[in-house]
Length: 418
Image (cartoon, rainbow, N blue to C red; front, side, top):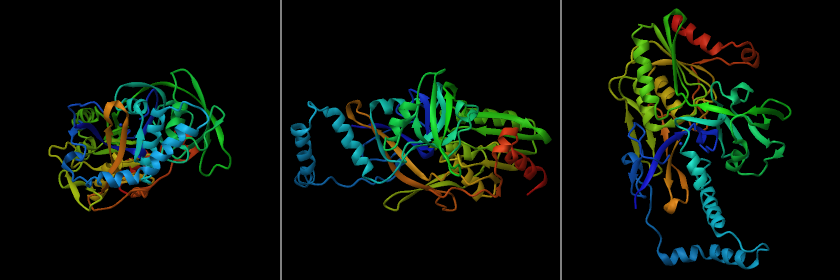
């Protein structure tokens, strides 16, 4: 039986904090329904990876070996049903907990189980409007961690930053609680408030922030002309409408004959792989865009698509610690080919690719890391990130004063050189 699989590069699982929405990123990177877009899901045989990638599946062990292997499991199952103090036990919860444990046993923070409700929520946030605080998060660590706040969101307005760890929700400690469960406590209806206790690097003590949830509009592309005849495009995600919106924005901007272009990928948590390939192709005319490397050593090459609208214009890419996954694919290819300079600070460092595979009878899904991706020059950026060509930080004082020294430097590089 084939299963619908959505191929994602969700930044650090790039999960959007939206009311009723579990999902980069991968975003969401972030997806069950078939859609006829650049990021469409592909029906597969369960043992086949999408895009024609080689499968890493191995032959199933003989039944006798499986019986021996799982004998302790069934022994424990029997003991729980016979000895546990509160009877009857919930078999469905035990089954789902067993799958979570199996996925955890892989030792990979990006491979995990989503129960039906989590999976339903994970399919929501790549387009449309949602209630929430508007932040991409990572649920895989010891604490729920902010990957990046969404521009103009409640999370950004209260000053949440990439790397912030949520150690309490409404005063209740989250130590030892699974990140996906912490996420559920953070979610809520627009207009309601949640108090988050934040642990931040370089800040001596945890502190509280009160966030008022709001309606989040996921607009993935913003564009305008800046001073000195420089075009500006900000990508917030690599979602369902990004390809169409980016091409439209470029058409409008390029018609004004700009002398340079700033591509802002800051706090972009990622999204769909195919969208990333199309985005890169708007700026890189030809050649390899990225490489995927599988567990058996096989590699797949993705090349630039023809017809890019901004393949020759002088280019600067803005990046920061919230630039992840699909955004890093884009920035990495532009940097490798010397198509433009990266300005900002080192990116997040999410260099793996996941398949999301629905389980039978609507029992949720498993998220499995199937490959690692490399830049065109073969650079592995996982847990390392991309170092900018020009390092420029934004201080708290800059933010309070409304200054953007990274954008200022980008304009300087375009008009005067480094």
